[in-house]
Amino acid sequence: MPTYVKLLGSLVMLAISGLAALYEHSKGLQWPTLITIALGVFLVFSIWVFPDVNREK
Amino acid sequence: MELISTTMGQRQRRYRETYRERVAGWYNGWLHVMIIYLAGSSALYIYGANTANVQWWEWLALPFGFISYQISEYILHMYVMHRPRKNVVLRALYIRHTLMHHQFFTKEEMRFADHKDWRVTFFPPFTMLGLTLLSIIPSLAAGIVISENVGWLLMAALTASYMFYELIHFCCHIDDNWLVRNMPLINTARRHHTAHHDHALMMRVNMGIGTALPDWLMGTSDLDCGFWGHLFNGYDQTHVRNDLRRSFVPTARASAQARS
Image (cartoon, rainbow over all chains, first blue to last red):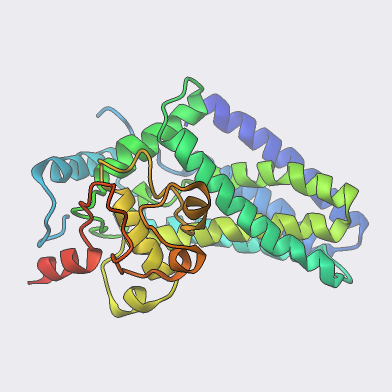
């Protein structure tokens, strides 16, 4: 996966999870707020550390 | 690391060796599955926690979302994964699927050798991220136009349908056993998907993986039967179309040969 695609996806994901967490916080949902933030960070982290399959060795 | 008893040819064997060399040594299939299902389960919890006082008709968002995902997956499979495109992301999907997955697994050998081979079947974590972002658009629209509950339930259905797809696809590539041979939906998917891995058929038939129903709807199935037949056909080959090249090797037979 090209780096710029990962970067763009990461930024959008962090923005979306941040907005969703703010929305949940405004509704008084404590655990969903925390899990939304954690899920956003976890997904972004996982796409960067996950091994790509090299086409040429 | 390779299956000891197998009917695969030298070309497939060489490709599998090459593919494994290209995957980073620390890759772990169990960790890969954990990432997908931990993220998916967390997302389902979040979507569920945001619903309140759900009306009976709002639950209809679940089957609607589930089926919508399966149809979308069919379209993606038919028109992107088996068609090379200029767009870098779409082309990456084509390369990963047609040039990697279909070389790694053929109708002669559909099985993993061990958990490190799961890399070629389960989508990478980026897919969950992409799916979440794509799901927001229709779900947000449904949440605004219909109701907030419908929006959250639609998100949940799309995520659950993706997790279901991954499970079914995984079951299509494990060794034959009593459970998968007799489990409705899974046994049908295994025969359906094995036929799709026939290189002579893979570009045009059996594009549905989670379920064969989109193929039934679109007339791209290798079966000549109706709705229920496509849902519960199992390993039965009675209704395989005669106008297609009949080169399907049942996984059960391949596994029996491998064990003997």
